[in-house]
Image (cartoon, rainbow, N blue to C red):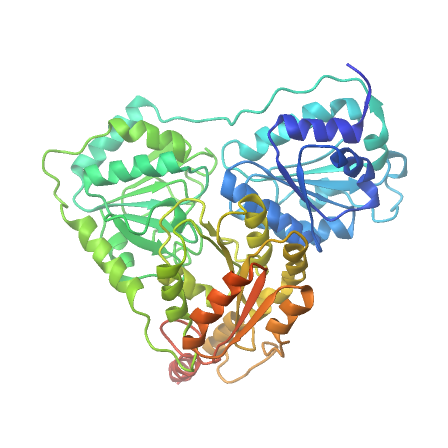
Length: 556
């Protein structure tokens, strides 16, 4: 062995643990790492804002199941990255954020950009720490990879004092990390089979992380054997194919009422991987707390999640991948009492997601999404941030393959554009589309420059209704007619794309969208399609005026 700088030791550990990509905004606080990356076999993506860099790393973690890697500088660099950390936390995504830090000898003097990162990030990470000794870097990086991926995955934050990165140390490398797996016991799989045999109207709900194509295929076979209807949780539509005859729909915002009734009428719910938090539980009204009101079998990789909100009759501490392997031996009764339920549920889903209802104005986002559904590759990756525009994507697009959806269950705005860029950086041969509202886009739209810099032909569809639409909708529900702080004056987003060196299109009618999209693809450049939406078209089901009128009537 020979002495290496702390920066070199750090980069060597990332390579040992299989990291292939890093997303960063550079800073003088970690120059020694940047120097080590110069000759490393790792793809580094330079971003324009730390929030976008962190979201790209989170997207990488969500798509691959391996920790997404991000580097930012101290102080404002770290706090700017915090939205990506919060997304990784609530979305159960493995991620490691490295933050440059002041030198050790300057601590507690409020030095330039000094922060206590254990305190700042302690409540939104699985582990936040600071390295004090270059010789401990292999140990700490190994632990970070294990923590980020074990149980319920999540983010880790590691602060890097500037002088630690330039210190020399002679230390052996760690061994590559291994994901800790948790399996159901034989008695639990037998118990599950008995409960299914005794049921009359069961249903499965899939969510969370730690899925892979093999686990999904195994659960499909399980569902087919039991003729079991299968729903998916909020923004987890890629964990069960929508074209499968057992698919019952998704528990998102404004879900199919027939799906809600099926769950309410069920006598056994098999919840695999998910937490059933506020959005999928319809603000915690779908099940009782702590007693769900119907038998619940909850499968989750984190033992602390089991019984935390809902008291299951059978709690199984296992990852979705291990659970789906175990249920290969679980078989149905000779006669299935609920035979035909899956087909009925799937027919209800197809009807719900097939024909968008008319909306005010000349541009119809539902018809745009159904056109895309029929014309883009099945493995295209669709990304979105937060806003009412996403309700058309979730309802009318049919996700049929794993690793095709990037959407924050935390409801973070500004996610779609950086997520798409991160996805395209990892998978340059796949079609990647970002959906964004006008407010959502401008929260991280500057990273469109990153797409141009690396020649990543993502297609960004900006749905522009001149307001923060979701907030305006709730404003009309609670304070009808009193518009306050929700109106926006927007730029020409097509011209914005061209100014950055990309392709730009302006769409005012539904009929203009398809040829504009095809021209964007043909351009071979990062593209923005600026779609003008009537402000009245606020949801797939109701106009803004209808919501206002209902609120006024309710107030008497």
